[in-house]
Each structure stands twice: as structure tokens, then as C-alpha cells.
Amino acid sequence: MRQVYIGREHSGPLQIHADVVVVGSGAGGSVIAAHLAEAGQRVVVLEEGGYVSSKEHADMRPSQSLRHVWREAGLTMAVGLGETPMINVMMGRCVGGSSALTGGVCFRIPENVLAEWNQEHGLTEFTQKKLEPFYKEVEANVHVEQVPIEMQSRSTQLFAKGAKKLGYELKPMRRNTKNCTGWSSCNFGCPQESKLSVLVNYLPRAEKAGAAIYSDCLVEKVIVKDGRAAGVKGRLLNREAGRPGDTFQVSARRVVLSAGAYYTPLILKKSNIGRRSKELGRNLTLHPAFRVMAKFDDKVEGWSGAMQSAYSSDFEPQGIQLNSIFVPAGILVAGLPGVASEHLRRAQEAPHLAIFGVNLHDKAGGRVQAGFGREPFVSYRMAKEDRARVPEALRIAGNTFFAAGAKEVYLPMLGLKGLDADEFAALELESLSVKNLECTSQHPLGTCRMGTSPNNSVVDPWGQSWEVRDLFIADGSTVPTSLGVNPQLTIMTMSTRTAHYLRDLPF
Image 1 (cartoon, rainbow, N blue to C red):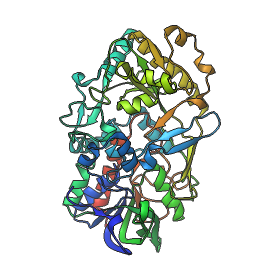
Image 2: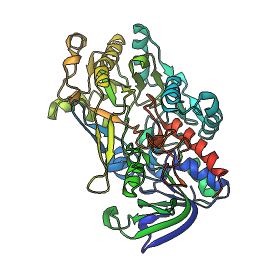
Image 3: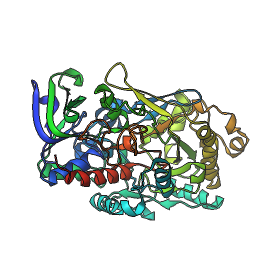
Image 4: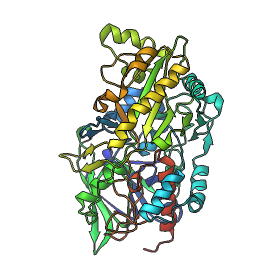
């Protein structure tokens, strides 16, 4: 990227004029910005986070990455209600958004999900055939490729060995990478810029076509005049420690919100838009995820290879997906049990550890509400049937590792020690409290869901607000239901579809 206007370095009020203002620079906003700028429209992109180039990010330690580009240093939480764990929802807060921090995994929308959208939500334009040209365009732009088997880490190979013994197979992932050599650091910056996030493709395209990209801009409200969106206003984060300071306002003929499933509904609520259906901020899905670790006698060194390279959808009928994963050693050992010398002993076993992840194709159980400060209050109540899937998901992962020859398995249960095969078999997983599990998510969706009626949705099938003309949403918040798979490609594909519509839509 040649240039980003650094908001924290600006002094005094800021006034900008544009044809289109895009709020958010991640997988949705960057796609919209590139297409509209290339169509000759004056585009301004506003990003709350700072600008960190992909090279600067790659030079950071994981702890620095968490401080500088992850929202709330990676500690954003969805508060679990009832028998639901606290869920760590990790999101980007930087130019490029969460796209800069993903593992690069690209799944198309599963057929069963599209069938649900067609039959239950009336979204009949969303079929594989009609989405095909948009998929192809995105996949070409970000270079979606299949991870070759030789790029699988030893951690993934061992899990695949166990899976085969138990009668199921792992399939190769598809990711937006090029010339990847397997540093296993996708979440914390790629040393070779092999992960083609929007920071290295769509945003440079937008900027080259004339789009202006501003970092450190906290958008607070949409400006509405005569029933149509006329811009946005907010505060520059140009005070000490990034606190809100001077005001800014962007006057525009069209507004696109791409601030994600947490922050787009927050902006709409503050603007008193989207309340008619009573669905704004509701229907949050997260794909709650759990990691299972295993210790082997031989060295694994799972950081050597692609961070994510294989998956299994064999258990999708039960609402369970298995995904390969690995993380830097410093973060890996933080999840091990024990304190003091016991934890140190286990940390020294890091080269012998393997990991695999399980996530749930969940029901909509979350809600985003205005908090007391800049951050929303987010709650999530896991559906009864989703809670019932957790023990089975952990059992599948644990049995797979033991089938591969693991000596111990570490479940993501607070206070639970490593278990050998006999202890694991004897453990009554159904008796464990789901509330005490370590649970994460990187896939918040659905809080401004799309539909065919203003009575039960926030936006129409093109992403336009039912209540305000020329106000569009292009991010994960419009996705009508849980996907059960990583949403990056879905968001980019749906945003491409909306971008094509907006290119030809007169002002």
C-alpha cells in the first residue's frame, strides 16, 4: 500500500467529501472500496485501528502483535449466559481488519446452509450457480489454493493417522496464499507476505484507483438526511494512548458499513437505525471452538508447516467440524495445565505437542448491545443442542490422537490435568461443565442479518438498510445464519456481489 492517512497524526477537526464512505477496511469493506474506486467513484475508507504494514506485522513478536493489531489485545469476550463458557472472540483492529490476522482458510458456503437460506429466509438468489462468478472472482484475486500435503505439519499428519484408523479422512484446506513455505504464523504476520490478505491485494487496488484510506477514525454515527444516508461522523483517535480527540465528518452520497458483527450494529444503534425488525444486534453466531492438545513420545514440532492445512466435515451432520491448527510456542504453552515448576516442566514438552481444533455449527445465541464505553456488551447463550455436541466433539478429537499413538491428551478444561488413554476413556465428558471450558471464536456473524422483509431482517438481499436509502452493509453481520465453516470467503463473495450492484446503481 502506498499511502494511508494516519488519523492519530492529524490535528484539528477533519472534513472530507466523497461519493462513498466505507466504514471498516476488512474482508467486506476492502472489496467494496476496490470495486467502487475502480469504477471511478470517489471512495473514502475509515478504519478505527492503526496502520501496520504486513512487513511490520511480520517483524513483531506475538505479544507485540496482540498489543498493536488485535482488538483489546486479543481479549475481547462474549459473556456466557447460563451453562455457556466465556468465549474469547478474537478480531483485528487495524487497517486490513481481521483479514490480516486469519489463517487464510477459504470455504465456500455449504450446500445445506444455502438450502436453509433459500427455504427458511427466502433468499432464493443465493445458490451455488448464481454465486459462482463471484466466488471465482474473489478466489482469483486472493489466489485461493489447496494446501499441498507436504505442507501439513507433523501435528496434522499425526491427527490424520489417527483419523484413518478410526474410519474417517482429513481433506486439504484451501487458503488465500501464494508461495507459502509453512511458517505457521499466519495469525501474527507472515514473514514472506505469502498470505494474500486484503492488506496486500484489495486495499492497494482501492488506493491505486484513488481511494483515500484513513486509520485511527472511530465512527460513531451515520448522518441521515431526508431518509437517506449522507455520511458519517465520529472522533479521531489522536489523543494520548489513542483516546478519542478531534471530530471528523465525511459527507457522502452513499454509506457502506463494514465494521463487522460487533461494531456495525453498534453504529446503527447509536444512529437510531435498524430497530424496526427488533433483530438488530441479535442472532449472533460464533462457531464456538475448542482446542485439544496431545503429547507424543517423539518430537512433533508442529510449528513447522502450514498453520492450517486440513479439516474433516465427516461430523457436520452432528454440527461438528474438525480443523487443523497450530500456534506459536509461547501461546501454545500458555494453555497447558499446572503452575510454577509443574507448568515449566510441561512447557518444556512443547516440541512433543500436537493440536487440533473442533468448532460447532451453532444456533444463533448471541446479542450485541451498547456498553458503557467504546466497546459493546456482548452476551451469548449456547443452545441446548450445541452444549450436547461439545462432549462428543472433544471425545472425537481425543480418541483420534490416542489412535495416532499419543501418550496424553489435554482437554480445554480449567484445572484438568493431562489424561492418558485409560483416564480419558473413563472420563465422563457429559458430566463436565461446559461453562468451565476454554472457548474461542474468530467468526462472529449475523447481527444485522439479511432477509426479504423488514419485519424480520435488518437489510435486504443486496445489503441495503430497509429504513435508510443509500445505506448498505457489507460484512459478516449480514450473514443470515451460522455457516459451520470459516467465513472469510463468504464475506468477500457476498461483498463482491453487493459491489457489482453498487457500481451500476445511480446516486
